[in-house]
Length: 548
Picture 1: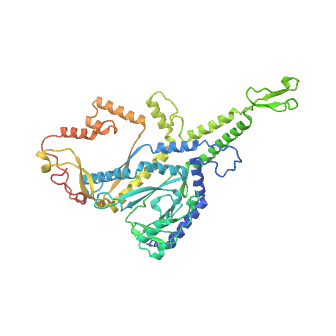
Picture 2: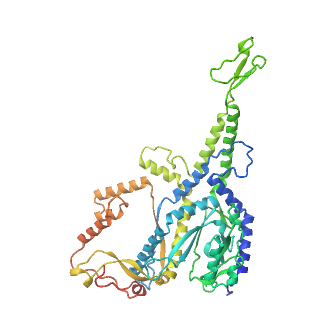
Picture 3: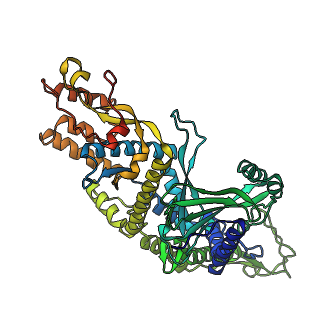
């Protein structure tokens, strides 16, 4: 098998310039600039108005934000579940590992504010055409563990992500992925110095220009383009990382130990044979321009012809006095022929009708109908839920793409845990038994913090699934009413009711659940925990006699 080429400054620079040429041939930089301008309201950029009105009625932004908010409004929770087909580990061991991973998912989601990141991620996909999440491990973060460092996820613009095979949008099928970012020169010099570069090399780093930054008119002073080159080794399958500028090496090539690219990529609408997608805003710009022009022409008409004008005979009146109540002298003659008022011109009502029609059709075709946006008043809550679900059907494909992207992100997190976490204290849900339980009683399950070796995740088959719950007001009310009815009809127990009730309805809910479990625990010998002696049980560690 041929070996992967060793990354060098010359190799990375050449591939970066090839990627820039590809993007320029697509018109990506200009398309993104135009879409961003229209989205934020700068919709007359580059137009010579000549003093005429330049109104902006930015319905485009409302439609985009509505779709992004609707797609990301669900409460997304990543859940890892074990594959029961594994023979090396017992089911109990796999469930314990899955519980540890789920706890880490919740921690990572909260620390990185993933809900806000996903909104920005989808906003970039809708406006620019693609969304990208880049995950890396920051070893400097203090976390109270023996092994420092935490997983960090950030949003990267699509103009700064370059695939080795631009005709394929599959991240894992790429021979290499190149990321570019703008960094102050002194920070790049510090990075090169800590990476072991010679003083003459890091002092030679100078500011440069960048096509992606120039498109927005950003200042180029004291900034240099830093390139992060990710390459899959053909023999080991692991990801190598190399950091440099176009002229100097910042960090030497290093084997990250990862088996997946730390990149999540989502296109709003796919384009065949291209990793860049089509933005939703691109197709809406002609409608926005049409509406702005109609408003501008209507304003010009109103400013010039909407007010009544007075015509008078200058042979009889030397000047017209427009003051209220002022007297005007006339040199004889018929007063009726001295002056008269010209009625203002009428604007065709079809203009307002076409404006409203264009806005309504655009919103309706994109799923942002009056019902979905709350402008309708159905008779009952069931009608509201049914109509909202029907109106969200056009967005279902994009929503499913988002779910798949989050699943990919979960696999990246597991890959980082396995490679970087080492042995850490993790919450494991277990039950005291035997001599560990006072008076030989069986106690309810509780969370114990035990050392867990995350390297064992590389040996455990784990599947990922998404638990998605609608966060809308009416869906929550409907769920609560259903639970109330099940409890009243004795279809579920009080413990089941408490475990499923939405958060915030009952304070100290977990304490009530634990009391119910303690009251329902039968007297006598406790049930024994499954024993395996496998590698995972050794990774979790043994329970202490009096812990908990």
